[in-house]
Structure formats: structure tokens, C-alpha cells
Image 1 (tube, rainbow, N blue to C red):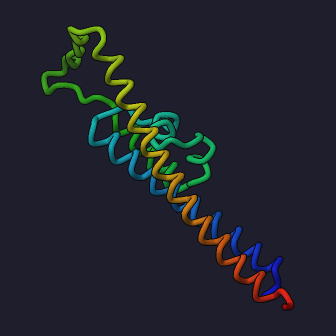
Image 2: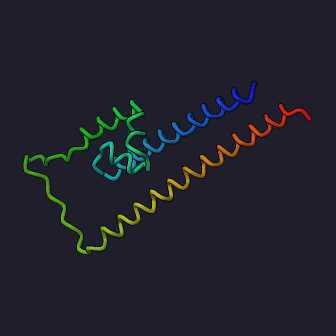
Length: 139
């Protein structure tokens, strides 16, 4: 295997790894949003997963799942046909800000963990490629 072929193989492996990581992030975000009863949309799932919307759109099967969930996530009406009760705002006006900050912190922690995994994977790839370069170098 030439150095160029090794580079292409490593790039393909890295792209596949990133794609799987983003798929797992999207699935995890969708699961959490369903569990928490949050409104589901492509933008909301992307935000929760810490990804760009374009990344979500690249995963066609997950995109279909999001669209199905979005349609089924409409609030249910009570059996008597009346409108559902509107939730009352929190008594503490800072509670929303604090909750938002906690959510952003969780997103940042998840993103850091994802980037750490990617770095470890790429460091392994670099080490392997350095080994191949050393094997190909005449001594």
C-alpha cells in the first residue's frame, strides 16, 4: 500500500467514524427529546445533538424519523374535546435562565466528549500512518 492509498484509507475511515458519531448524537438527542416531551424539529434535534442542521439532513433515515416524530409530537387534546391546559410560567424568572445555562453546559460537555473521542481516533490514525511511513523509508 502506498502512502497515498494509506492516506485515502485513513480519510475514509475518519469520515465513516464522524458519520457514525453524528448518527449516534442525533439518535440520542431524539430519544432525550421524546422522553422530555420537547417539540421535535430538525433545528431542535440539531441543536440538542450539537450538530449543524446540514448534518442532520445528510442522514436520510433519521430525517424521516424526525419528520414522523414531529407529526406525532403534537399535544394531545383532552377526551372532552376542550383545548389542552396552557402551562403557567415559572414563579422564579431566573429559573428559565438557569435551566437554559444548564442545558448549554450539558451540550458543551457532550461536544467536548465527542471531540475528545475524535482526537483519540485521529491520533491513532496518525500514529499508524507514521509507522507506515517509517516502514517505507529506506534506512
